[in-house]
Length: 249
Image 1 (cartoon, rainbow, N blue to C red):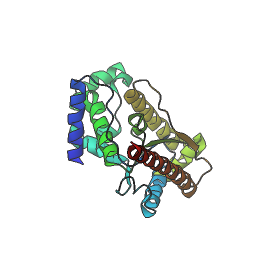
Image 2 (cartoon, one colour):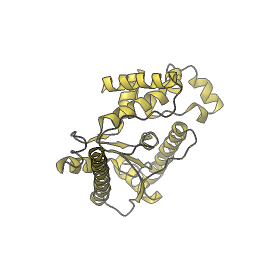
Image 3 (cartoon, one colour):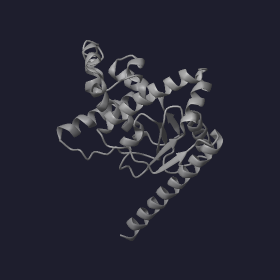
Image 4 (spheres, rainbow, N blue to C red):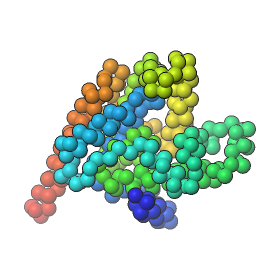
């Protein structure tokens, strides 16, 4: 993984040197990005999906690698590359979202230059390294932004209503209603500020939006499996079409 990230960092430097904004990673297999609101409880669903995809070997003909779920591992990779604490990155607030006093305090922090100066490019390099690996499900972390324009990417948004999210936070963190509500508001703001920062004001777009409020984990995993299966079939048809065109020439 570290070698892939290093290679991607070098590619990013080359891209900046050449002043090119059209670089696309050499993405393999299928890339599935899942965006969700805080408290939508999607991680278990994503792991169920990975297990089913590997069991049925879906997409293995396009990329002979087992499916991986990429979630907190992105923060771990960022922590290693930037030599910062996991917590500093997990609760990162972009510079433009900090108040005046908070900016002054933050300016004396050892993580100041590394986070505000290098997080964007390093995160992009890490996400692209996973794209090049192929057969990955990237949960959050702005994966949908970075996957825009990739023909082998399937970008999905999972929504749920307010009551569902608060109830899930209460259940998962053993909190009362008020504490769960405050936790949801805090982390929702952190997430939205982060996405706005890396998206540079551009809104994230999706291929499919699912409301999971009335769906249990298994049913939602079934939906995601069917969408992924359909994407694999589309890519397979495109590949066969390209091969036929080459033969005819």
